[in-house]
Amino acid sequence: MVKRVSFMVHGQVQAFISGTIDNAVMLTKSSKFTHQKATEYGLTGWVRNTEGGKVPPFADPARDRAIRSLQNLWCIAQVEGEAQGDEDSLKKLLADINRGPTYAHVVKLEKSEKDTDGSETSFKIEKTVRK
Image (cartoon, rainbow, N blue to C red; front, side, top):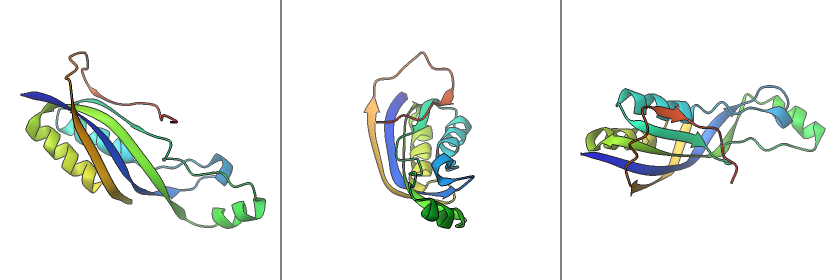
């Protein structure tokens, strides 16, 4: 039987800094990890990072230089999405995202059942949403 679940993952991810803190990009791999697992299990749906997945800018140039010297930072992150497919595959996906990718610590996984959507043909990574 085909089912659909909505999920929100709360956790911490290791952010690798490139350039100045103001223009830093966090390479968390959280959405890519979820996409890879969902595709592996033949699921459809989507995933995206939310506002929690960003390194905050620092106004103090001295602090910016000091932080840039660090190899990485731990940041709060949230990933949300919906997945659809057979129940066993959905259970596997939820177990995987509850463990999280390398360099991540999942604090909480929220999930709920949704109505199925017959219009999807694949699992996609959507653009980050600011809430």
